[in-house]
Length: 346
Image 1 (spheres, rainbow, N blue to C red):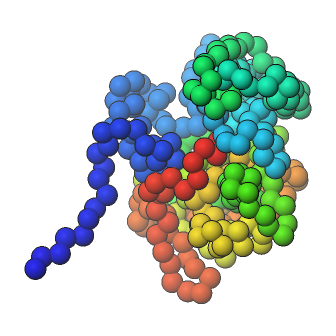
Image 2 (image 1 turned 90 degrees about the vertical axis):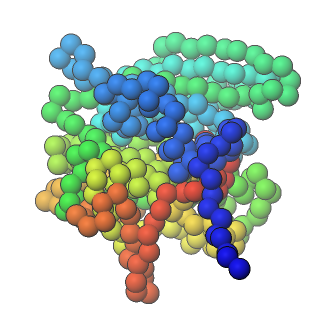
């Protein structure tokens, strides 16, 4: 008798939730359908945003849509999440945010009081960063066709002339710095969605990253090679994307990756790996070793990155692959997420 081990099919006839998970299936959709359709140098970089030359300057442009459920969660809501997510994508390009657009898709029946709270949240998040909303749009869909509210935001920022922050600049020897404890956003969303109660309240880490990135760039300058926020697909997917784009290997120190005890406990209870859970206020920086100490100190000077630490290094071996050394010995491959761990988290 011949036994055949089934292999997950890469061909999909319809869109699945996994296509939005930030892992392998999302990656295949982008590479096989979207990039070939719109191929151009700015898009081919597959950065968090496009960096475009403009009249002697460099402009960064990004866009994102937010469909989080529930709309309100411990530590934030869909409104400030949309602002933070878009500003953070600009920051990962090394760009100072200048202006945002804001578009609402509203479902018939959404309470105006709830919409007002979301709008005020957007306003307050923008005011904190001194980034105005300069244009927008509003659409309404029939009841049952919109899940309350979806938000799309786009952002424009300015990159300093002496900077090039891109995955392709990562090189062997670079130090990998993680800005703080991981998996808080995804676990916070899950706890509300599923009605779970933990001994300690777990809040989303949603936060604007430009203030800390500005300090990182001031400390590291040209020696800061790449930045990536660990949103959909978590730290694991972010690192795999960088490894593939730079054709390098990454080795992580498993014991160095910060995870709060209550988050780790929740993940163990639910059978989840914190490396694959979304964050909304955490990023990884790839820095030349001679500047790593200064960059780490600069990170820790900002509250959002006070617990930053070195978690790995870039190597020549196993290009395109992330490996993690385990605390009890040995190592394992940290692959990109295959499916969808937590749907609708951003």
